[in-house]
Length: 158
Image 1 (cartoon, rainbow, N blue to C red):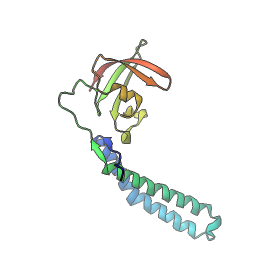
Image 2: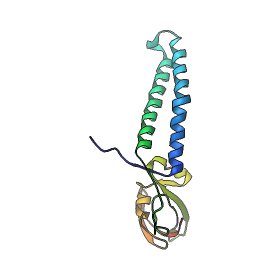
Image 3: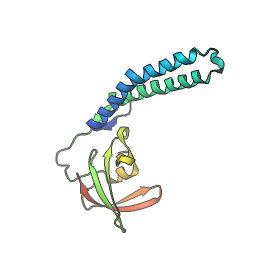
Image 4: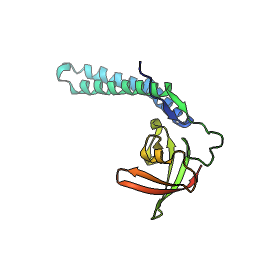
């Protein structure tokens, strides 16, 4: 049997997944079952779009529950490694400047389960994170992006 993928995450990320799972199991499931029950009361199921829609939603909710349970079961907690204060590792926030123009950006490197680029959280599997991991303050790094190569310099790690 194939080994299941490990999901690296912070304690906060795991807590959010557990909250979502609890919501889906306790509230969302009941709402969807109620929608199915109401749609059934409309009669002929063969031409009942409300019923079809509710069943699709039920499949989505059940699929998400399975996905969340698997992610939580295979969670690997991100912990601070000794001696890694000045090195980019999972869970660290990295501030860098783009060279040569000096635009400043900041990202926290997290596991794919909790990545959210709009919130400044990038997956450890992303090209940016892969280029940054293991580097230190003042290191210059070439990053392959969809728009081409970009050179950056790390200015802060916390």
